[in-house]
Image (tube, rainbow over all chains, first blue to last red; front, side):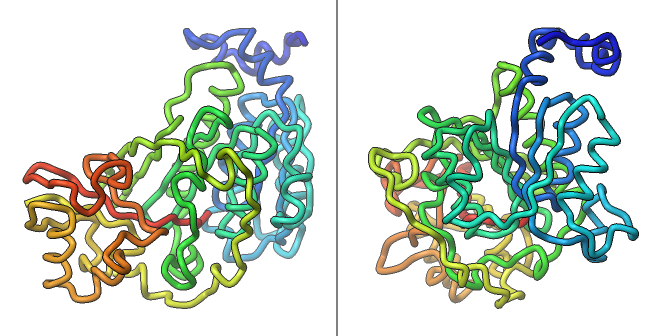
Length: 271
Length: 89
């Protein structure tokens, strides 16, 4: 797979990076990536993958654009309200970079369909916003042996980790169980600001790009925790668990109950 | 005193601050001491004398479950991080 003259010019600023050249760009070009969620994290993730020249991006989201999305989900404007998010995002990304293929998949990811939906990709980047889908995405990627680039945000706290099947801890190795209903508020309850999802989504995109380009990545077996109110960046060392039900010796399906993602106890995370 | 970093969902015990300091020679003592000043804290992270399954505790960024758990020794310069998973996006 070669690069056209237009592509060489478009990507010239990254092609001059000392560790990034034609080989790395061609690797990105032939890569196929799924982004789950086209929201606060999904917008920066898919935008930076698009700008970098990832050859095919499948955006999976079943929501429609809402006015409350517009403080952080920068691929949409007021004219997109009530339109299908994945489709509007795919159009916006195609306009930014017509050299690549962006597909909209207007579907809800569930524990039942995740294993089929997330098959055959070079990487999956998780930008969803609730525990049932996050655990479904993790377990599907572990079983399908697809690298998963995880990120999550709550108020001014953000987390990211890169999961390489057979090599690193997965999300379930670190958190075998989701917290009970009401313990961890959602962004809707606790609040979220666009610069924060932008920060974490950019980190996820960068890790994905470096992985696809065959470069070293920093967040293997590492949970990055950012507290942006104090600007502290901490790296927690992670270890694989042999008895992990997702990536361990024996896979055991463990769907997380939707009840876990209830909208109660909104004050739990507030100061 | 050790520094205790609390994930966002636990910050009602720290008046919204990301970290507090607490006395104690072991992790267990630190948790008990926080609980005496901020009642309900121990119940939030412990169950039947063990760390709750959905809570992770790291001392100097190392998972205490891989070591001595609640008996992990804690010194003045140590940093304890207590966190459940978060899911927002």
